[in-house]
Length: 634
Ligand code: GAL
Image (tube, rainbow, N blue to C red; front, side):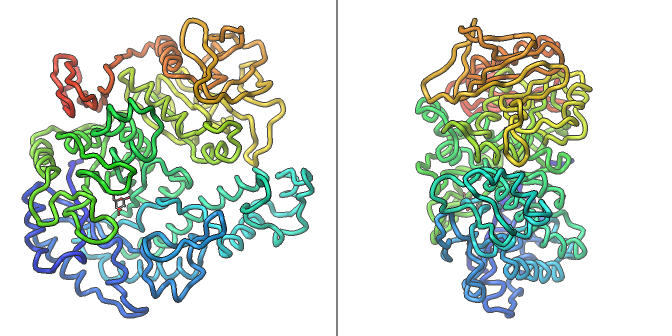
């Protein structure tokens, strides 16, 4: 697979006279893909039924004539004003019952059938006009589902659809009452029509109700996307793509991806460090101009598994963004590093957002590869360098990693619904495990819990996985890997009531959880000989071998066969010990790396990326800050 560069471009933002030179400049910089159209509804259909595609025809022709392949977006993330007038009830409603008004984007509820149909009609129009046009080499459907907190909507349309969904799931109201335990606080219903959305209750709503609503909301996003897929599929052979976001967990990306061909995501490392990652002030200061050393790779590894290894970075940060609380500029070299990191993790295309900084609208302070006056911004120089390096680089051959980390969206909803401690966050738990693995120089595949094959892994971790199915247990024990599940494995049913006894119900492992504690920040349960349990601690019972215990003699890690149970949330030192022990048994060599250095092995090369603000010498290679090196694997 040939790796390539792309860029996001908005012809409707610029005078038509500029398009041709822009296209030439893109090609000259080594860019071969250009994404357009995803927010252009008000120009494609300025009034209901009045379609204006001529300008888009000309834009496509201009870009393609210069040699660019076009990704065409469907514009459903930006319904125009007339659409909202036509369907006032299409607006999403927040958890305070307030409409999310027109005036930005993503102002729609995934359950509103009228708008969903209108979006599909627009997709059909585009598909009919461009579906067989060879210049359109891929499609992007909508833009960043879930961004701006847009999965959960408490609208009337959502309520009606939720009732139908519940009726299908439970078949009878008695079954729902039983499954939710509605006898508690006299919450029993006589029919599905009585069920409201879980908002504005006096105190917390029934967690079973909330979790059902979250599952429903995820299904609605999947169905929304599928509606456009249904109309586009017969009209085009070009791949269908969506651009996911970082740390958006409210819908099941694995489920949605089944309808698509290629996964992609939008990588804003410095924005993410500041607006969606935990970490103390020292960590944030150290990586201020680089982004967190694991955040990008985590999403590369996660999204790689959505469509059988086919994935892109659809939007790559090219300079300072505008939307985080603070927006520092990337350290020189970071645009190149992020690009190479994506390729090393298997990306087919890295596409930069955006071509030129636009001097109006919400993102006027967001960098582009060119300044608003069309002079070259620093990011573009690095793009050129990547293009040259790509041309001289032998094929990056994908390879299975030695470690699998299981990621499950439903577990995130489960623990958001029943946290039992203010900082029990599933993403954070899995991310810390990922970081700990990478601190040991390991490459990681992030996989869904229903993954078909785990055979050749050496270590498999499933931290915080709410439901460890029998099938997953079989696949784990059937592999040659050392496996770890817990904390909170099988402690609740999928309907969110406690299992009795409280998990983890593992084959050949006599362990049960008697009670659990959540621990506030700054407190911990130190473990004998090093490391500690933080945030979450379980009291375990049973005869399983105790591998690690705290100073009160309470078991923290148990089991001696291929599956271990972890009864707490490890701090970094404890993760290091656990991974060390599993690796030793699995005869997997660890390569502890200096702070901020990260490695990634492909089938042919080892890549090293220096996120640290100081130079690092590693295996004979000198890496300055933001340095990248690669060498053939022996
Ligand atoms: C992304 C979005 C783009 C643009 C960009 C700015 O989340 O898809 O349209 O808003 O952020 O960083």
